[in-house]
Structure formats: C-alpha cells, structure tokens
Image 1: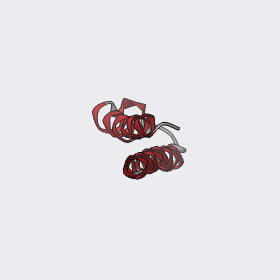
Image 2: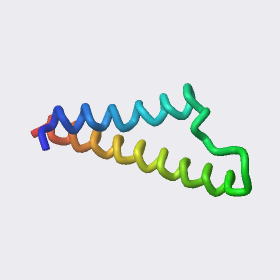
Image 3: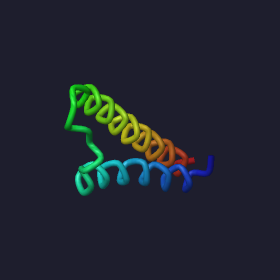
Image 4: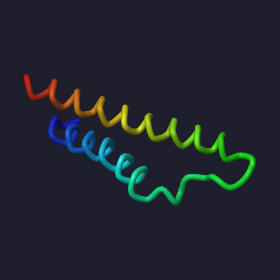
Length: 66
C-alpha cells in the first residue's frame, strides 16, 4: 500500500469512530436486556477500528523513513 494512502486511511479510521461515538450517540443500544452486551460489542468494534487506524498511521510513518 502507498505510504500516503496508509496515513490517510489510518487518520480516517481513527477520526471517524471518535466522531461517531461522541457526536451521534443515538446508535448505542440502551433500551432492552441486551443493552450491556451491545454496548460491549460496539465498544470492541470502536477500539478495533481506532487500533487499526493507528496501525495504518504507524505503517505510513514507517514508510516515510524509507
């Protein structure tokens, strides 16, 4: 993958979930019995996407050195 595309993709994958989590919290489940499990799952998805974005940023920065 191109170094600049890795950095751009990484930034998108870090900024987008943070934006969605803090500015449009209406998609978090909180009504029924499965609310806790749903929130745990969405939290895991959130941190997975942020971690993947950070990984792409680090790979892009590493490619900039070469």
